[in-house]
Image 1 (cartoon, rainbow over the protein chains, first blue to last red):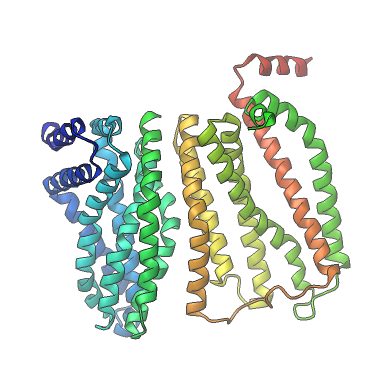
Image 2 (tube, chains in turn blue, yellow):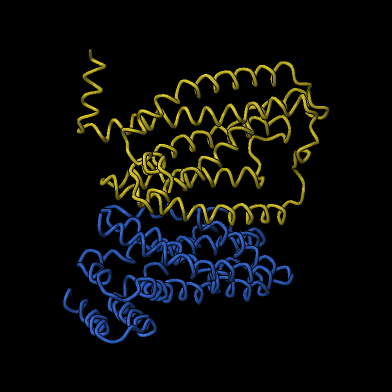
Length: 244
Length: 247
């Protein structure tokens, strides 16, 4: 297991001897992460099943009435997506930390910012993107009007990367701890609130056929801020967690 | 960097200086809070709309201010600790969190008590209430992280990063919550937006705000002194101090 896991890392090591090329490092990290993720299929599927299950609880717990569910749908889909991203967050740096490859990454002369960004992007491709693709299924189950579908997909597409970026800060801060899972939720959930607010607002605007470009622009602004700043915090948090 | 800034880095010096400052701040806090409370509760004129129930503002507003300023203090102290590796700054940041959290709880509780007579319900998803609740959650997260990490320096650095991330987020949260609220329920519940208060109403409020700042300084210094003694318990100066006190 550990041998197969370190194989893609070897490619990263080789690059260290080459010139300083952040783009290459980014691609190499992305490749490695995706390769590792594809080898552990159950980790890929679990958040999706969780997403489906949480969404199923609402008709059972609140009411199966289509009108009630339709009003709840934007919020429920968004909250479920948020919770499933959170569920997958703990594993982001954990296995790398446990087998020591995280230390190797930290020691490499390549910019940590870029490596972290690659890891987050891979994480999003394995959680946020499938969640976005699966969202229409849940939206139909919750009787979200068909007009809202575009808003839901677009807002999830722009919003979930921010969730991965912010969640990675929590994951990096708790990677050295044995029980990180619940703690990550405590740290990260308050920070998720703006994304949730703008995301559901976009869906509601789409349902009532109001213009949703403004909401999406705000989500995009949050994403831009996240891409620019979150990797700095993640990199600093990783250095602290590993050295401590 | 001025000399006093470096001196602050020494726990011993910090212990001594806070010991000198503590009595002054305690007296100021006591007089300002007692004086302001008596003025506000007994002598300020009743509000023309809310009658006497508005008087809780004299407790609500200072606590709400404090909850926010303490967060900023904590984040700045955390940043100083992170950048200059100052132990004292780490300790200040650590001591700030429980004080800020308790004042946030107090602000929420007084807000709820105020809400009952004015809005007719204990809790309203008003933008200000909600952002105060989220601030409380941020405090909880920071305290949880700090207690989860065993190594004290790692805990201080990690919480400093979290506090800074939260600091960047607070304006975004505040703005998004404001925006969310106006989207859902446009101006149903609003206290008459900071009415142009007569001076006899806002002067006691100002006195109480200053009094609460002094109170924060007092509690912070007391906690900080305990924390310094606890962490420096193996150093010679703390032992000497204890020997002196024992007599």
